[in-house]
Length: 166
Image (cartoon, rainbow, N blue to C red; front, side, top):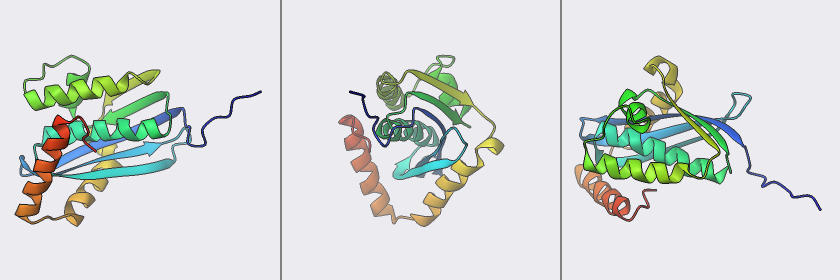
């Protein structure tokens, strides 16, 4: 008897991620664009985060990408980010001073354990235009009132402490 693969299995996936915060801290969003081996977009995911820092939004885009990659049963992943800080902190080249980011990196490292291989690479902003455009589109489309921004931030912080960000 042969084993059937899950219809949603794509073993090799490339992801471009981006996060943004208008005001830093300010209204934030994160995005991830997923490509198959033919360089075709297979998914675009994004989240509005409420009030957060730019660095938190970048980290959130990484976390979002990992959650979606698990749905595809991906095994080998390549992640590209224009955040030099995120990439160097992930690779251990820079220390993480912010306690919230330390906790989020710990969650990310735990999520990564399920993949055969993971490459995280820094790229210039010019090579991340699709993810950048998507995250900015989210920010423009989801202009929230200050009270809604605060409520969303509080909900995100609660989920963050429960380790269920999205």
